[in-house]
Length: 180
Image 1 (cartoon, rainbow, N blue to C red):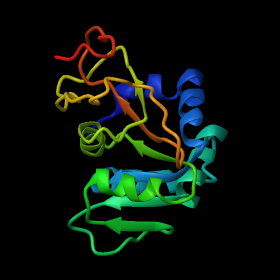
Image 2 (image 1 turned 90 degrees about the horizontal axis):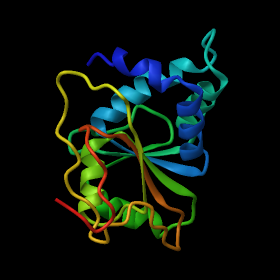
Image 3 (image 1 turned 120 degrees about the horizontal axis):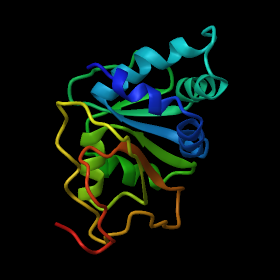
Image 4 (image 1 turned 90 degrees about the vertical axis):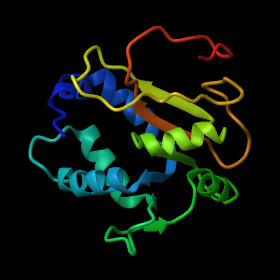
């Protein structure tokens, strides 16, 4: 998939500061298989890359060094260090992770994982990155919202399950409680 359209926005200082605020408190990355293969195939190559922004290199080091849980019914073993492959629902995995010690759980752009967690009311904070332009062909939007209608609700316990994604359909945001 050609992601060149997003690069001018993704590498801005504002975007880098925002994304850093999402991953720094997280001790676990939760990824779908496809996203994991893309992220873990690219980000480790940024470490030591000439000209890499220090914030991007820091994220790459975090991704390599943090515990990763990959949701997959097709992978048998992880080829990445500190990675566990799990064939369970996203909601069940987040419930298990929240029951243990640790920091925030971060889901990075895995739309299927984010949708499942929203449907199960397991998202404590949803961070959207909105880009002013969209590619001609796009994936379906995240249609379901939390039963609470809250986008930034924090609950006590093991950190927060965070998601970082992108808004896929332009239009006004509706206040909490007003769903379509």
